[in-house]
Amino acid sequence: MDQHSQANRKEIGKVISGAHLSSRRATKLARLNVAGGNIRNIALNAAFLAADASEPVRMKHLLRAAQSEYAKLEKSLTDAEVGGWV
Image (cartoon, rainbow, N blue to C red; front, top):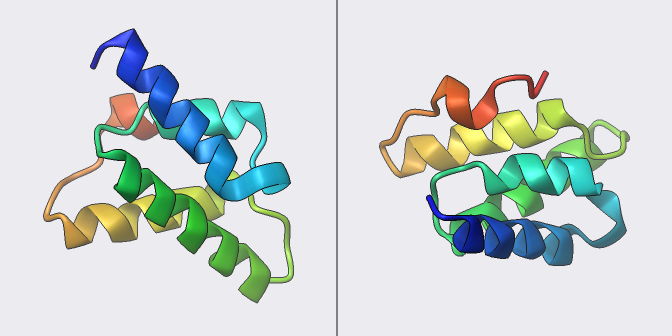
């Protein structure tokens, strides 16, 4: 993945989640090897998971949402993508 597309993914993550997604979390989302629409789905689903738990969006919510999105795509998350998330 080139730096340009990673920067675009990071920006998508920040825009989708607004104030609920820190720059650090957006950077971690940008490491995912999926399209911007999938990153949007992950950020949105993480927000719903956090709301259900009456918590702010945390890495555990993003990880669970990423696992769900990757399952829909029939892909596996790699350690390079999610290492150090939780």
